[in-house]
Image (tube, rainbow, N blue to C red; front, side, top):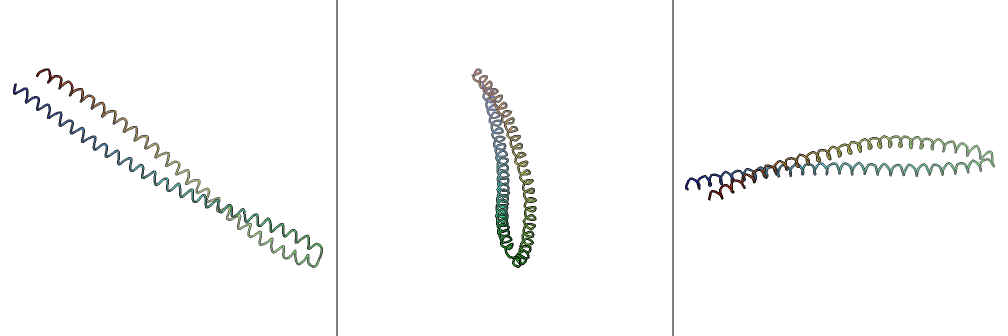
Length: 185
């Protein structure tokens, strides 16, 4: 009879050791999973910040385009006013020559402004192209992060199922050991 109690104590100790080992492994696994999710959250935060910066740059570019459109409208108004001056100048040849010279000067300046506007638009288009590339890279990075997160989620699910299966087997082993012990008592 003493032998039976010693065997029972040894089995209890063995079960306790197994349960402590399982608990330790679960704790380590939980810590690792939490670290991974914290890193993913941090990376998403960085991606969001970069995306916001790109959006801000695009908004600034749109503002510059709007300002350029206003300048073009103003230039159109100046051309209209110039046409009125030319019509008035046709009434007086002497004044016509003076005003034509003045109009030529204004047209030259206007052409310079248009050239500068075209150059600004060209630079703006280059920036927009760069921003588009950056947005595409950001989108690609977000897709990659989503795929990595999905992969980690699937790995975690598989590991969780494996651990559950191990736990079920160990519980069944414990049940049968308890039944065996209870039958022997």
